[in-house]
Length: 258
Image 1 (tube, rainbow, N blue to C red):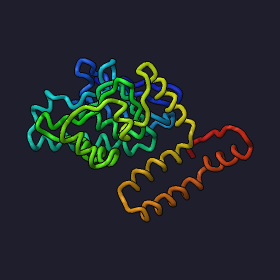
Image 2: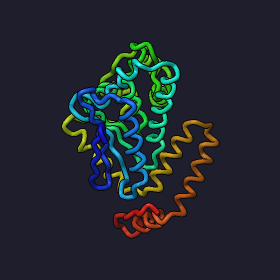
Image 3: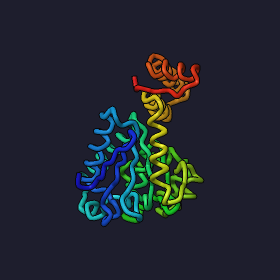
Image 4: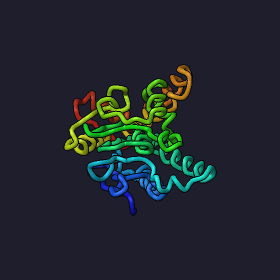
């Protein structure tokens, strides 16, 4: 891949967006490679969790590639937005947990990429924002929608209408980020979290992700019924038998994903 670096350690794949000269901006080629990498990881039984980060010290992803964006019209703009949304949806709906390790600017498409991940870690020097308004456009990869669901309508309106950046602590305070760590600890913390997730029952992890994603879009009675069915699926797995046996026998569980 031209714009990604892939590394796997202890069942955790780290995907690094590697366009430092462009502050890791998302062009069509990078989105295509990211889509392929996520698809490959989902289909690889040896991988149980993923981390997405950016190369260099300045940026996670500073947004869309402005030079490419400048060439779009209504038709190509629609196609670009729909493709970006497809990639973000693949990440959000991945049955394997995906952690964003935000190491710097997460603006525009970068903020949207982080929001599509299931968990978000940020270094103390990270900055978040949806500045598309300053380019005369709006977010196209889910920035008006996922941000609203994560931080509420009022704060989403503020970030999208004003286009200003917020720092990592503010992002944590409003619920956009799960945890803020020192820059030197970001990747090790993400790896440790990934390894913790990799030790959990894969089917149960996927059912949690699916139940939360589904339930967030429907009324509570329907969401609870969906959760009950997902619970039933887990009860029929070998992992459930292993987990309960391990607890009763006072030993660590060894989950197989079956």
